[in-house]
Image (cartoon, rainbow, N blue to C red; front, side, top):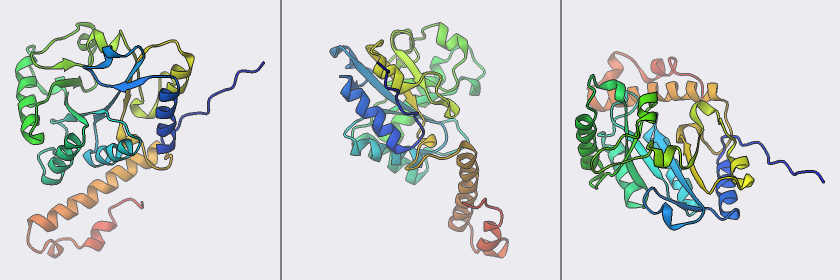
Length: 253
């Protein structure tokens, strides 16, 4: 008797919907970092916002259409987006109001200190002001081995890279468009009762796309946004560069 193979998982919304469907078929409760212990089989869905709040916002709408909720982690120290910007703030607040959990994504390399608690608490307070709600989840951006090995604790925060969630759960991630473990296989194998699945909304879209296209489009979009901000913040920017001239600097989308 031949074993039926699962189809390959790409980065389309259809593949993500298949992931959710498989979790439900195999009796996983899609839950959170607090209530997971209430269920025999549980899956926590997490998204680190490394590149784009807008992509994450759209992905949250897609997840809502699947009747699921997840956690999104905001990187305050990134150069790719500004969580304080008006539209970004509105999107994050709306995500929170629709039942998605907003957590802090923290980059240890930004601070020259061995005591991480002070900058973590400072960023936590800023994020709470942005979303106008408490923040109690913490993930680390590109965590160093010492972060993963030391089971770090911080007052008022759940470290999602703690032993509880990084070792006691089966952890898998789509970092750089690459799965070290195949999620479909992890689910159907029935080997793990607890799954911790990290995806980055930046990678996903309605149709599967090559990573090179995604990154080039990301750079192109940034150029367009820069020109938009110019028109909103200085008088007559076309005296220096026209929109048509700016478009010549953008990649074809």
